[in-house]
Image (cartoon, rainbow over all chains, first blue to last red; front, top):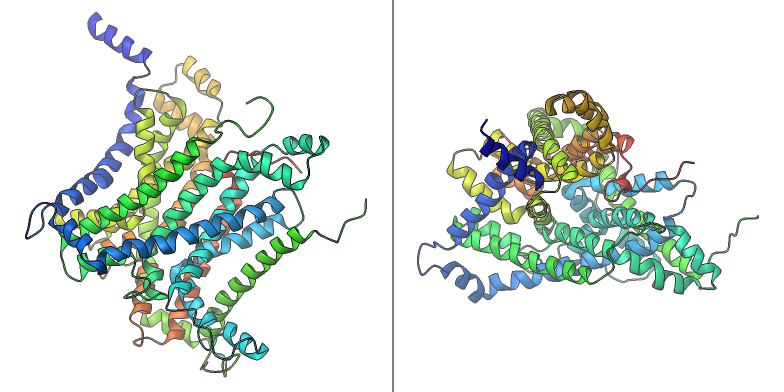
Length: 295
Length: 277
């Protein structure tokens, strides 16, 4: 090896670049070939519709109210569902962060919904909340309602299925962020005379907020891809016609790949906008250690 | 100190929420379970009689054996490849800072932050173009997209927990990177790798969109077969769909209980040391 190449290697190594980085190559190639390239290909396809100019597919999407409204429908399902899951998880996780008997059992039971899968959840919701299901039967027996309540094949069916699959996930994340906060901080506040509400809102919540933002993002991603449950328990041609159904129909029913790619890109863009707003707000919050003491 | 039984109203609200959730959950699971054993169930609290024939019917009607084989093969391939590709990358990302490392991390984060269907449709188009979709290879490739980053993100904290001094000592003794990997890191990382690969298997069994978009008639996994049997309502008896959903759920439950033996679910996202009992 010549001294020149040795010198270059040495200078690169000082900046942290050396042959060990080659270990990254397979993973990077995978992500580039299977994620970045298809995405760019999709953008290119969406810009080459059969007729019209480069933006015709996007123009068609935004001028057709039936397609355009799917964005609002998706957000109207995903945002409240994600928000509900995160907000419901906080008080429950707050109660459960200590040690108590049966904690492991409770966490295991909470993990069960993850194993259900959308199809079993959908079947279960149809059976349980349907017009002759146990839930309506119970309400009718108690005399709370005169007629069965319609909770399936509409917005609520999809919302419940998102809660069943999303809540355990949000709960596990919030619980792990909460257990990362040093309890001695709260104890210190308690000795200074802070009440329950003061301890929660002035110490725990600010420390938890960045974790909540991350949890919200991940739950939102789950809720944003409601495709199977929107079809099975929802009303896929009306109130729960989400954008993924529009994209799927364009690709596999009409074989219009330009329109399908355009819908998929628009979906990704809307989702990334929401995520970056949340993460942008998160960066305004405290981001240091939550472990107390040195940190 | 005696235990306080009387709780504050806040606690009652919280536990009430938990109870409502569990009652709803029990109702959802219970009604599927009861229906999968029921003979006929119309306007009554419980079916007229109970039978196990729906399970036998689900097994033959849906040709479950090949479907389960496909599911198993896809999961093992996806888990194996993503561990082989992901662990070395996680190692470098956990240990090193280099120009562009944050950018690379973001690149690996993106497939997890995007709903599968947004990249699934373009990916399926590309895979169809190269004749890979509709076969097992297409399903495996599509499922690798979120799995490789998932392995990287779950393995990075595991690797950070290993003291770099151990590796430095091995290097001082003349071990090369390959040796450090095979005889030092691999044994220490076995629990982490097992946890990550079981979680990848769980995710792959449950991954609907990517498999749905890329599978052909003989490369369907269990979720996709279930979806087709349910959305083609009227062709199959609802009870046999329910029986199949129960089979799916039991399979996932076994996988998850195995996974929980290796990992504490709350430690996956944040590195929290649980105090010893």
